[in-house]
Amino acid sequence: MLSILAFAFRSRPEIEKELPYLKRGSSRQKVKALIKEILLKKTFEETIREIAIEDNQLLVPNLPVYIQASGRTSRLFSSGITYGVSFVLEKNHLLEAFLQRAIYWELNFQKISAQELEKIDFQSIKENLATSRERYSSSEKGEDLIIPSLLIVESPTKAKQIARFFGYPSTFFLGEQPFYEVATGEHLLVITASLGHLVDLAEEGGYYGVEVNNEKFIPYYGSVKKCANGDQFVIYQKCPRCGEPPVIDSYHRISNLVKASRLVENLIVATDPDTEGEKIAYDVANLTAITKHTKRVKFHEVTKKVFSQALLLPESVNLNLVKAQLVRRIEDRWIGFEISSILREHFNEANLSAGRAQTPLLQWVVENYRRHQEKVNLYSLEVDAQKIILGSERDFYIEVKNGGEIALTIEKVSKNWTEKLPLPPYTTDALLNEANRLLKMNTGETMRILQKLFENGLITYHRTDSTHVSDAGLEIARFYLKEHFVGRKWQGKEEGAHECIRPTRAIDWITLRELIREGIIKTSDVISYKDFRLYDLIFRRFMASQCPALRLLTVRYLLFLKDLKLKKRNRTHCSR
Image 1 (cartoon, helix red, strand yellow):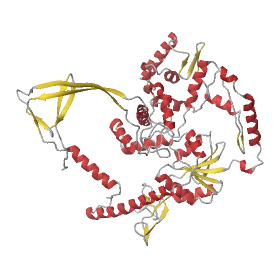
Image 2 (cartoon, helix red, strand yellow; image 1 turned 90 degrees about the vertical axis):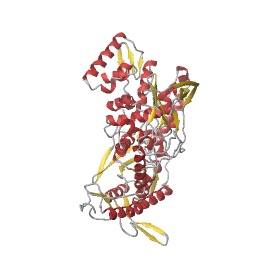
Image 3 (cartoon, one colour; image 1 turned 30 degrees about the horizontal axis):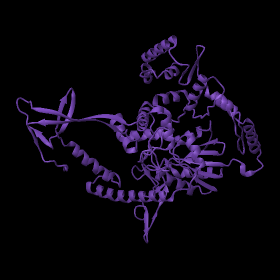
Image 4 (cartoon, one colour; image 1 turned 90 degrees about the horizontal axis):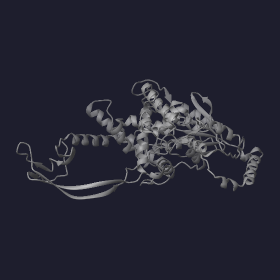
C-alpha cells in the first residue's frame, strides 16, 4: 500500500526523489511520514492520479474485476467471438481515477456526457448484439469456424509474451520445444520460437560452401549445430575447434515445426522485421510447406494492439530481402574465410580472423584511436568562473610575459535570441554511443538489454537507422506531454520501414516499475535496474524530441590579445 500511495503522490518532489529507493528502510520511513502528513492535512484533490478520495477513504479501481465482468457481455464460440457492450456509470472523480488506471491496462473508453447518453440508439445496439450472437452461435457454415494457425517467432521470450496477450495459454511440448495455445477471437494460435536461423551456409563444397557453375551461384545449406562451448558449425558431425559432438542441432527444431504444422491449417511467420528475419521466414515457410497457407506478418513493437493489427494485414515473404541476405552471407563467407586464412598463415596464429564488416571497422577504430592519442593544448579564458575555450595551439599561440599575465580587451559585439530544435529520437548507433557515454554500458551489454526490452514489449524494434516517428508514437508523446506536445515526424524511412527507437507506452521508468510490480504489465523476463536505466534514456530522448524548441541567448564577443600570433590553419592531420 505504501508503494501505491507513494506512486500516487509522486508529483511532489520530496516524494518523487525517494521512489527509486523505497526498498531501503530509511526511505520508506521518510515517505511514510510525508504521506501521513499529506493525508492528515488533506492537502490533495478528489482524484490523485488513479486513486480517488471519498469519505476519508482511498478508492483504487480494480480493473481485473471490471475486465472479468465486462467479458461476460460477449461469448466465444467455435466460429468466433460475439460483440459486447459495457457502460461504467459513476461520479466524475471516480471515473477519472478509473480511466487513468484503465490506460495502464491498454483499455480505451469513450467518455460521454449525460446529454450524449440520451442520443445513443440503444435499440440499434441491441439488434447488433443479437445479430452477432445468432451468427457466431451457429456453426453450420464451416468457413466461419476459427481456423488453427501455427505462429512462429524468433525468440522464446517473444513467443511467451505474445501468448500472454490473450490470457493464460495452455502449453504442450514436442521434445523439449514448448508450444503455447491461445484463442484471439479470430484465430486459434499455436505459438513457438525458431530460436534464430534454422539453416546456415555450409563450410565446404564449391568455393567455401557456394558452387559457381556457368555464372550461377548455388549455396549449400545445412542445419545449424552448436557445441557445448557455443561454437557454430554446419556440415561437421563434431565441432572443428574442440572436437566435441553438437549439443544443439536445429534439425530437431525443424522436425518439431513440421510435426506442429500438421496440426493446423495456416502458417504465420512473425520473425523480426529485417533482412535476417526475412530469411528466417523464408526458410520456415519452405521447411514447413506441408501447410496449405503461409502468411508473413511484421510488427515493430511487441504489444497486443500492434500485434493484433499485424494479424489483420498479412504479407508475403519479401524475396528481394531474402536475396540481399543471401548475398551478404556469401560475402561474409568468401571475404572472411579468405582474409582469415591469409592472417593465420602470415602470423602463424590459428585463432586470428577477419570479416567483411569487422576488418574495415577495426581500421577505423585504430585510426581514430591514434588521432585521439595526439595531445593538443587548448587555450581557455575564465570569466566569472566560466571557462571559454579560445582555440588550440594548432591555430595560434600566445606569448605569455610579465610573470604569466597578458593584456586582454573584451568587446561585446551582439546579443540575440535563437531557437534550437531538440535532438531526434534514437537510432541504433546513436543509442549505443549515448549508453556508453552516459551509462558506461558497452555495446554487447546495451544490445542485450535492448533485445530484452523489445521482446518484453517495452520499446520498438531496436535495430534501425531511422529517426521516423509513426502516428502511434506521436499519440504516445501527445498523451504524456499534453500542452507541451509539438509533434515531429522527423526525417527517416516512411511507413512500413523501421521507425526510431521509442517506448511503446506513455509511461516513465518509475511508473513502469510500479506497474510491473503490481502485475498490471506482465513481462516474460525480470527487468533489472540497468534495464530501467536504459529504458529511461530512450524515454527521455523520445519525449524531448516532441517538445518545443529550446530558446537560447547568444552573446558574441571580440577578444583582443596584444601578444597573439596566428598560425597557418591546416585542417588535415596525418596519423602517426
